[in-house]
Image (cartoon, rainbow, N blue to C red; front, top):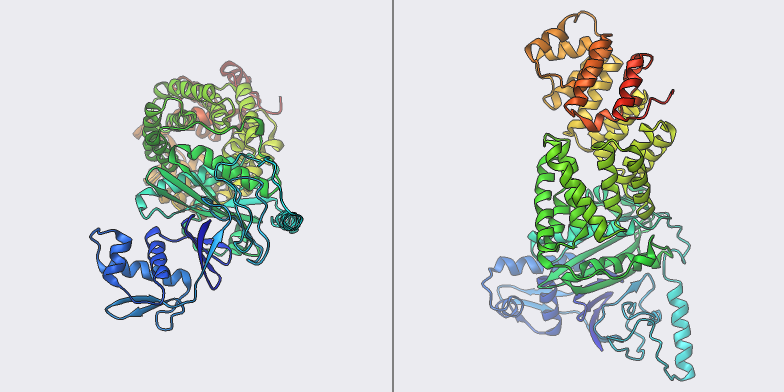
Length: 639
């Protein structure tokens, strides 16, 4: 039987090594919990400071400050006042005494941590339908079930009629536990960043990476809106109440929990919370070898889906993942966490992903990461020829290893669209990615782009709105929305999204750039210049005068040509297309178009030429359609 200590509404689960308060798992550092266990086991007597240090830190050299910090965390977690203690009494200069009454209990299933629901502790336990599912309380003494019993527990068991009655009542109680059964209509879910309780801040990448992976797994629930990793990670250490999170993100339930890594083992503690009522619905722990973390993540997602009575896509192919090389998986997680949509972060992530596949050549997710980082860097100064071929090879390898990897189809879609201008293939890949993971905001953005390029503007704008709904706190998504709306001529609506992006990240360069262009088109040159100054774009007065002339400001005639003579490489050929069009110099605009294509300048922006409303003066010129046909881009929507 697994041992537990209970005092007031608090339980210490010794087998699961965790603290439970009011039915909810409480995040706490392992050393602090060890200190609490030692005090409880020696309750009623004075435990001297040196004795506690020796018991918890096993002879390691630590200062009194470390012990003070652990006791301070316990008091905070237990809501215990040092001046009027209910649990831990301080004996000045000597040590501590645990003073509360304690019950020693036993759980029915050894080796398993308790799965809890929102029911009080006096309710019957859940039925043993699965060796991984465990009891919500400890008051009912059920028959012991071997740790290695098979799933489904189909062995014949002879029981007396009264035990059958108790089991029937337990089953009825279990069926009423989840949010769905209690009347909660669950349409959306968010995973809060899992806490790192390993006692080592350098392991944050493990808890952060696993958070993102679990979100990706849950994203496969097609009937549920799952908030994206980018938005979820913004709530790390945010100290916001559950109802506040529910209001900000418009979600009904939140998954919270912690990751504890100890040697080659890892445990993932999870809770399902009714966010609006701040009420726990269910909790469960998953423990295994660190090399089996992929399988643990899938079990977490499958269990949550089961509680919500939902089904993950591609269920038939969701067999347990094989073990992975531990250093390779560590490198993969470091790569995932490093990605931050900047050239520096993507280059760093690329190094980690390459390290991962060197250590484990069968790690499909790492190959998808290589392709993703390469594709990003191709748009930021790295010669495309150097990285696009590598990205093609990497995404092909990822799909060879895992034909159901949504992120690989997503990335192959971006490469086909941005780098190869193969719009039919891109459309197919984005659709395939979304069939596997309907909550991928990245694939949803790509799908919106390709629809817009193909002339399905209204449908593209709807998909763009869906991407924003999944990722509501992303400056990248808001700016993409701003850019696509600008392309279609919805300038004021576009500006609202650029400003929303800047509210989220005042330093976001792409948002400042697009907002500056829109303000120029609207004739608000003061605000256009303000955005330029924010990111040191167009710092000289002559550059700003050239910008103003291009956008129709009076009294600036000749400024653009003067600026170009002084800066012959600026602006780049792609941007000269728009400058010359606004100035009415169409032949020079077409010459810049040809030059941009020849030099592969801003290939990921050139794909929108056919739908960019800024180029409307060129649409009636036969050279415009001739160029689009030559390079293989769809004609503008009026055709």
